[in-house]
Amino acid sequence: MSTAEHTARTAGQPVGTAGEDGVLAALAGLLPSSRAALVGTGDDCAVLRAPDGRYCVTTDVLVEDRHFRTAWSTGHDVGRRAAAQNLADVAAMGARPVALVVALVVPPTTALSWVTDLASGLAAACEPVGAGVVGGDLSGGDHLVIAVTAHGDLEGRAPVLRSGARPGDLLVHAGTLGLSAAGLALLDAGAVTPRGPLPDEVRRAVEVFLAPQPPLEAGPALAEAGATAMMDVSDSLLRDAGRIAASSAVAIDLAEPTDPASATAVDLAALEPAARLLGAQDPRALARHWVLTGGEDHGMLAAVPPGARDQLPPGCRVIGRVLPAGPHGPRVTVEGVLPGHTGWDHFAA
Ligand SMILES: Nc1ncnc2c1ncn2[C@@H]1O[C@H](COP(=O)(O)OP(=O)(O)OP(=O)(O)O)[C@@H](O)[C@H]1O
Ligand SMILES: Cc1ncc(C[n+]2csc(CCOP(=O)(O)O)c2C)c(N)n1
Ligand SMILES: [Mg+2]
Ligand SMILES: [Mg+2]
Ligand SMILES: [Mg+2]
Image (cartoon, rainbow, N blue to C red; front, top):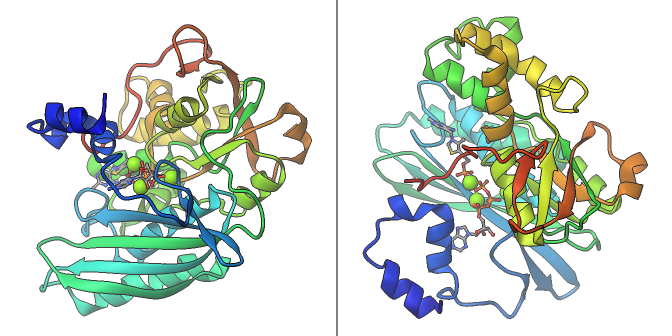
């Protein structure tokens, strides 16, 4: 279908029924392309040609009550999270973040200290990786909105796209899986209060939800190790592995997290206390659900050739394998089984 036909057919449809992919498809082809774009829309970052090389750029927005609640998160937490999710997109190209610009929409009643806390959170996330905040914009509005644009230096490496995974590759992951979703579930149920004393066994989940700490070093390290495809996990392991599968025209089979021999079994064990605190009838099943469908941990998910197994960066685990697409086309299975619910979609029906 041409973009014009697509636009005509879908014009009256609310975004709430189109789904994120539907909204992006409606935009695709209407947006002007850039002479400088080596990689345009569709990956974690665009890659632009610069006079002496190429660099990455990406943007992500945080919206009050959609991504965070001020009853749970301090300004510092939101600043760390806003930086982290963009730094993770840069790292997921195999680049090192260098500079952010930050646009803020702030209701007039917001305490100035919330905004200065936000700045200190941005600094806390950026300084350790040598990135700076070099500009932004300010507006008043009804809700807090934080839009961050991040720039990354590929240091001469080729960018690692979502589209390069090949059958035979190993699927690897660095970082946590499901902790953020567990933290959200605990806060949402009122099982913990963020600024009250947190039980030790669930502290990490709440902390990761409030301010994820992606293993940013793993991005460039995986690129150096020969990663063929990479992205950060923002919407869920299943959904984002599905994006690598679709972009690369391959199938992906994940290890079963409830199998004690699988690399994701450690995630399951870390999540079960949270599931028990929530009174889940089957804590393992809820923990498995978080591992597979929870987003916002922002770990690095990559495909690597089997020969790279011995050069994986610290903390990187093999969690699945890349297969030919087969008669069903690109898709993600868990030990051969097609999962039902897959993860977060802002515009899911
Ligand atoms: N409004 C838009 N206009 C043009 N391109 C867009 C727009 N929104 C998203 N995209 C592009 O679509 C692709 C997928 O976006 P998406 O936001 O899902 O990726 P992400 O930022 O890696 O993930 P997340 O936002 O879940 O952290 C990216 O290449 C992004 O630049
Ligand atoms: C108050 C509150 N309710 C729900 C969630 C869960 N959530 C929101 S967006 C998202 C996916 C990634 O977003 P994006 O694709 O925009 O990066 C998830 C898992 C939250 N963080 N805060
Ligand atoms: Mg991403
Ligand atoms: Mg995004
Ligand atoms: Mg998303």
